[in-house]
Picture 1 (tube, rainbow, N blue to C red):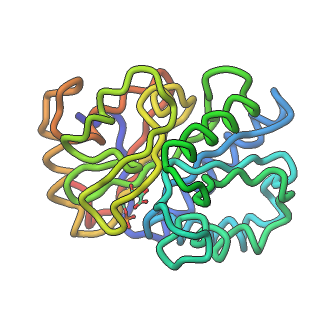
Picture 2 (spheres, helix red, strand yellow):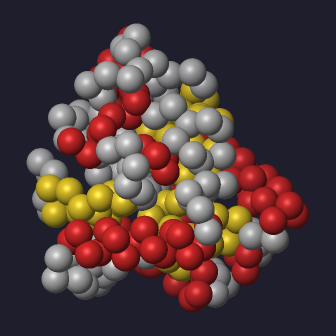
Length: 238
Ligand code: 6PG
């Protein structure tokens, strides 16, 4: 089920619309709370948004009040080409005036993944002081409907309490850290960024899927208490 979808003729129009909407959310959050918490997604789709933020929005975005977190991370060193942190560093963090203390990556240097998951839960608790409620949380969608590193059939889909889990996924690299639904569903704004013809089938399947709770598609199970918007380009749209 897709409640709200915005379809754009191409990636550039989509990316500008997301940048404008995220700027509005950021300025509102900063005016209310003095800061704005944004949870980035991994994968490749966010690259164009990061680059747009780093150029056209470099001086318009209140980077000094922005705090960046990650929805999931591949358990590889931060300079590994598969690292979601590295992608963000190269396309955004190294190009905007965001204080280093405002950048909250998932650490991947623990011997045990479970300790890394617990460490990120502590980092979230330190920042939010309670259950994390992101002002804006981004999600991409995998071809089989996964979000963050919550894959179809994973026990992590049914986690009722933990905020961060260590998981093994049927993708490369398999060892990962991921936020859970208790956190994803607490976000004030959830933006799905989905582009390209290769995503058309999964978007159409989720659209047709009446299920919510027990959907086979992790993306369809998102039921945030806040706004949930699917940003689609024409190629991915139904
Ligand atoms: C990851 C992501 C993952 C991603 C989807 C879509 O670490 O891989 O967080 O959930 O968002 O796989 O990836 P693309 O944007 O590359 O299609």
